[in-house]
Length: 170
Image (cartoon, rainbow, N blue to C red; front, top):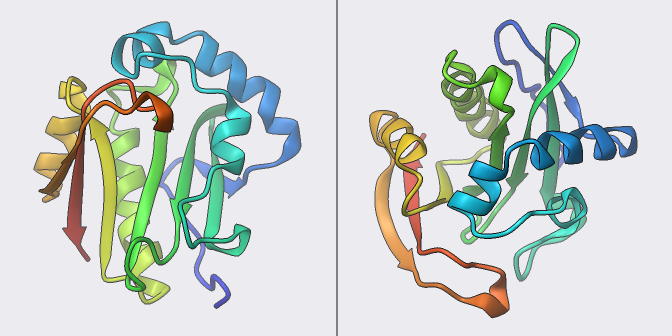
């Protein structure tokens, strides 16, 4: 299945993540130790996000988007089609750089994803959020995401914090 709609976030440019984005994106990650070490318990290399796929999914099911605002890299979206069920799309990672937080960009990205995923036949958007990430949990709760499951700490899966799995019908 080919993706037929574009991902449009107001006042931003969204495009496929490119190799040239790796170093600037890693710099944004490195500049945010509170998020990565505090919330997630570890640094997350850009390359891990670029290559990680859940069981049963292929590169054709993975969509990585760079978010730009005012000529600057502002974030990344990692989206997986058909996981864990065919009509469910998994938001593997939504990261907004510190300089662009608290201005509604995360919410705007979610709203763009709802229409984008629905246009591709998706019926549900699913994600995981670290239990201690209260700001993200509040955002997802106010967007209608509901609890599905709890994932416990699992160092073998690089999960160093308890994670809530949430879902939202589209």
